[in-house]
Length: 165
Image 1 (cartoon, rainbow, N blue to C red):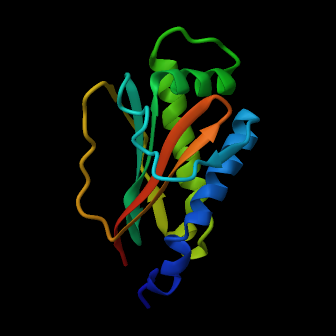
Image 2: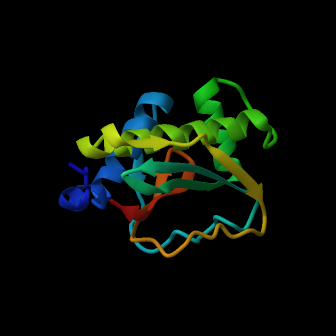
């Protein structure tokens, strides 16, 4: 018997699963509340300054990725909350912290659907930094994402699904 997510597609694409995953990770790992920002403000302020994008791929009965993007100041604040250290620059520890947060959000999100939790793996996080770049992904089957406010930090979190088996 072939496993399929088609019967659970409504759970996989439910934006509340993403929001609850982000909230769980930020409350547990950083001790801060994280709320979705209302409206279409995803592009505001992110991409103007140095930005950090972390990507964790999904493989198995779902292929796609979890993507977290924020500005440098937010990345440093998140890393500071995570490690207890202060960061004046976007160094490897900050990049690793954002990659790990993305990994934890991806894991929390996939755990919301039993078939996905048991039959979908995660890649090692990739982290991209810069001022003027675009992350191109093929046309997804679905994408769910929000801009979140977490303490003084703002970040965009999205799950992009290329294919459901």
